[in-house]
Length: 160
Length: 118
Image 1 (tube, rainbow over the protein chains, first blue to last red):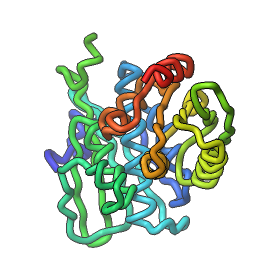
Image 2 (cartoon, each protein chain N blue to C red):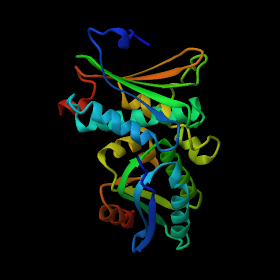
Image 3 (tube, rainbow over the protein chains, first blue to last red):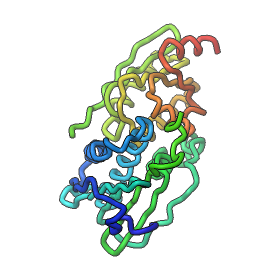
């Protein structure tokens, strides 16, 4: 992960901080709460949709892979903003070594013809929806940080 | 927040079978999707059109379910088309390359018209 965005109180501000039980479907709640928290940032509808998708996928992964869908183990979501960036940090209790995320796109032809599982789209979608995705972990926690750059041309559609 | 359970129904049109989808395409949608696909297949259509006009949320599990349906259609030599996707999901179909294997149209009429010509 880059700079410790959360501790830099001069530049980053927490605009939402909440926890959700690890239950199927709760990614919709995460998506809605994050969208509400960033409503004043002036994101275009297209960028907001992308952020919503990335938040939903990261929250699903946290509930499923990190917390094994144990409702009593929450996923925490923290939304931070600065003049330059919007960060959403999604944390589960699946600590341990940081996995090396694959960077290749899923092979749809192989999925259609049988050798590969039809699943495995989540991380690929997240990476394509945000400007940065950073992953950190300690012995207990695993955090995915989603970053949208608020200045510059993070999304071509913004200036169209 | 309660998930909107997927409802899927099948209609026959001169150009093929149309599966109308309403709600969310996520892990809860598997049964409804598969049942609708099976009902559509019983008419032995050359074309099956998935109409997403009533769909407001598709997650990665939903993408996997759609890939599964597309695989079934290809295995039985049927063409699967899509219409009614929002701009966001058209982009996701492009990113995932689903649109390379399943032509995407803005609406049902354009999809079935094009299907009849090819």
